[in-house]
Length: 248
Image (tube, rainbow, N blue to C red):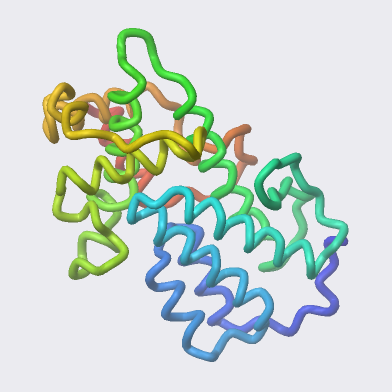
């Protein structure tokens, strides 16, 4: 199940794509994967799907990110039918197989990490801490996503705005759309978040303070549904955001 004898010899481009995605640099990964230099076309196609999922998440479209990761997981299972899976009512979810050398395992671990983080986020969206309304907590979670994927992600802040990052200029509507998408991870029939919730949460600066408190209360990333194995890579934006929160 875990052998890679049938996989083409990898090239530096294969490795660069995996490394970029492990650190959260999905734009660079898309560039590498589109260069035509990736030796393993099947792996490359699944990694492109993961990169698109990260782009959706950076844009606050968590439902699209979940669907894309399910497609990437299904693609890996088609190639290795014996891969362990987790129960899921909406798409294929990978379980992490025993570690083995090679990019194949790193790709599986990457998909497992991203699915595990979104699954944990969906569970968080179904609950709230004491003293906070569900709608306000949804906005706090959306703001945490903004910090980790946009403001404190150097690969985002050092590049011009693009169509994938609607939260970049701190627009209220972008945060509300992201919070609505988070809410619908748990309840697809949920309604839209409204401006009144934004105003009651003291808008941008009030939500930023609450988001930093939320980050400060967490353990170190990655924030997967179950504890990540030792050595599991962490996205740079998440690491920076968490470190800042711990120091504040």
